[in-house]
Length: 210
Image (tube, rainbow, N blue to C red; front, side, top):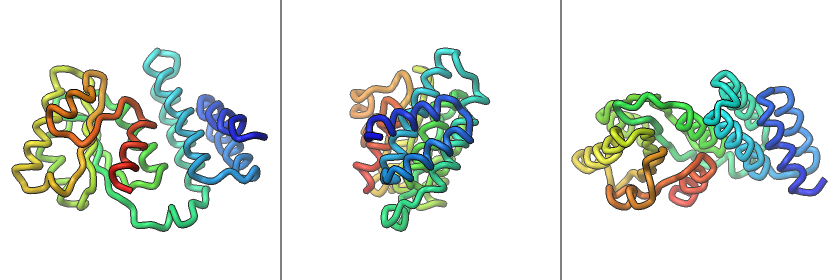
């Protein structure tokens, strides 16, 4: 099979949300000689489609969690070679205070983990002080801030300001995301980057940290 066909098979397997199908497609890709990082890209594309279908009401939360668990199990079987042996960069991820939306952020966390990062997901409705505590506790390299409502968007700015007040900002990258966030917003509040979706979040994290 050519590369495009293998990647499509991996993506399609993810959309089934069935762990055995995901594992079978992953094993087949390995047998075809595809590198681990490329297999993860294929799985990630499917995970993004799962997230899109969830947002459209075609899939439900149990499906998303089954897909995420299946992806993690598949990634755990991959031999990442030197890429997996390097010291992991630490990312704190969470949805800002006042916002209870969780699924998009959870997909981002899963994909960041699958890409080799050490991710500490703080969940949703996270007080700004908790982000600071986590940065200190885990000696984080990056903070991911999700906000799905315009009314909670300023929480991203508040976290950045508190990082500055604690003398941590210079050592920590900040990535923002969520429906109301934009590149212009990220620049306005002094974030290091904005990611529109989970694959882009992984790419931005890699470019800033690796």
